Image (cartoon, rainbow, N blue to C red; front, side, top):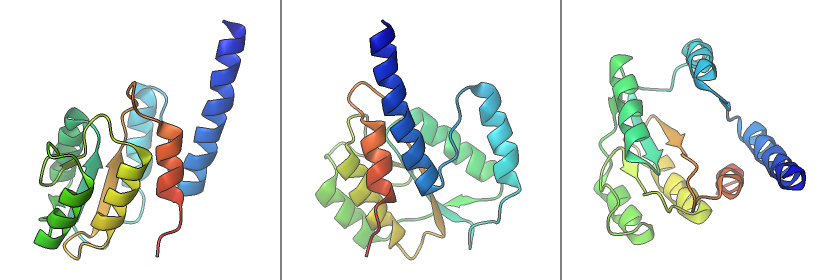
Amino acid sequence: AASHTGSLTGSDAVLDAAFKRAGVLRVEDIADVFEMADILSKQPLAKGRRMAILTNAGGPGVLACDALSKNGGVLAELEPETIDKLNKVLPAAWSHGNPIDILGDATATTYEKSLEIIAKDKNCDGYLVVLTPQAMTAPTDCATAMTAPTD
């Protein structure tokens, strides 16, 4: 058990490094969630109210939508071109709207391509990426992919 735990620690350190590089604020427990909400409430606002939410789980996406609405934000209406581009990189069962639920088996490449697409949508003033670790998810790979420079 000790060697198994030790191997997880190394992997977690890589994830922490990728998060730090991307400016991701990581939470470990419910108390951290509330502390982070307070911290984020004091940060500069997005350039507008229209947000895109990219998630691999519907529940957290809905919670993010509720929080957005409660705080004066609105879900961006994705441009038809954005929907078309997402259709080409996502499985047929994706949400086809905002919040953009890319499903639980989303890979790092899926996150990366989806983020590149929504970042170019003129109707989006900002975006929130939600990643819920699942058995088939590789959080470190996802974090690394989303921190890579884009053109």
